[in-house]
Length: 216
Ligand code: BG6
Ligand code: MG
Image (cartoon, rainbow, N blue to C red; front, top):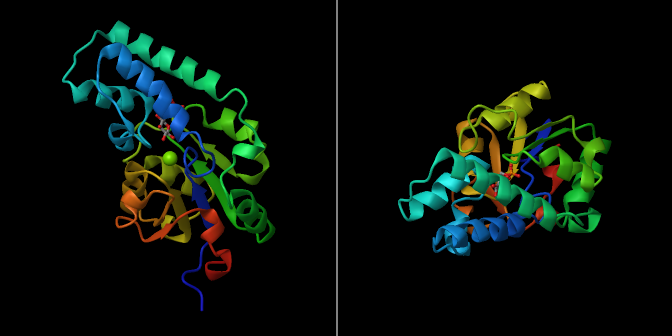
């Protein structure tokens, strides 16, 4: 018996398709060190899925720091430069387990797919990974007024595929992303992050555990 009839799959990028979350962490750690803010993987957990602006705001909020608009802009630019440098060699080998097989099978079965990411670098990264051909569209951080945890990114992805949210699964590794998916009326599957397992409809350690046949 099938769990649910699904017509579309929406993938978060960082932490679901590709192992870039640690690169984001290291780049923010450098920023936090510069600001004298104590910042570990623990504090970083809440930042996952947030936009670049909201991430920096969250780091400043740890110590109630107030900085000028100019310094804010400079820190964001520096963070992105450091991050981009750290992913220069990103390639197909950085695609997380189960992703490629799922993309291939879903495409064969005519299931529509999209990326729904807070990252403004999303299209560039998908290209580096050689995965562009699998997605109908990539909704990235440049294309939304309200980033995750607001559902706009996923709603736009569903709309772009001409599908209703209830016809789509969202795969997410972040609390902000699961919240966005649930609020948008999607079937939310948490991947690889046990901290958010309870919030989501389902939990998978990685996408090798996803059984497409149960949904399509
Ligand atoms: C999300 C990541 O996908 O994109 C966050 O989970 C990151 O860690 C955010 O901060 C914004 O990314 P970028 O590439 O626009 O700075
Ligand atoms: Mg993510």
